[in-house]
Length: 282
Image (cartoon, rainbow, N blue to C red; front, side, top):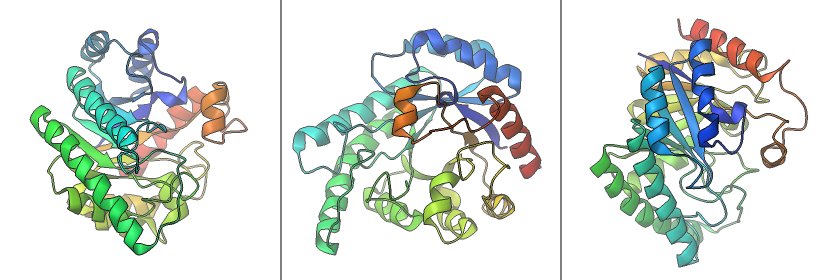
């Protein structure tokens, strides 16, 4: 059965232990899951978070925040190691909080773009896959799955399409490495959303259900009927998570290029977006 989730970027960044009250807010709105981005490894008391998830009955997922020092595809071994260590930290964190899924661009630092020849790209993929194999072994031992998220061309030059994510997943070749789609990014990069979802098929374990402007789902031009039909065709049973941002948090607003309010307020976006997604998948 599909679960409906909200990423805490909708309200705060970074998410810290003091922000666990947002779980109660999400529960009251009718959500099944709360997704926490882990920006600094010391931001969250995972034991306190685990208790909050137990108390509210919500499920947990983690969003990977791949900064410049966390890049499994980088040529610098130190930066590669930073990516591996961070992803292992996320695996331990989500397990402590009772979750099983980590989503995000786990393959490279967000914002790093480079133009590669086919030979260079192959070397980058092989380097990334070797590092993700190490991460995957840790995830397998913890019962955790990491989902590869293609991003748009303005945020990475490495994995923009589902077919590229499928290629990397096959190179890692682990049951702990799966796929996700974000309809905001895919709306820019994919020719059509339905075939991208169908290409992922049974390996699709997580979905960021976002509008083309990251506003309220259903208010823009994302091909939602196509998304719904494809998700039903592949018998998708994971989470649909709204990931949006607020202009009130200046640093994340700059990073995500959010220059204007995307809805009347963030709570309205969360409530109306949830209602739309539930109706969409009914």
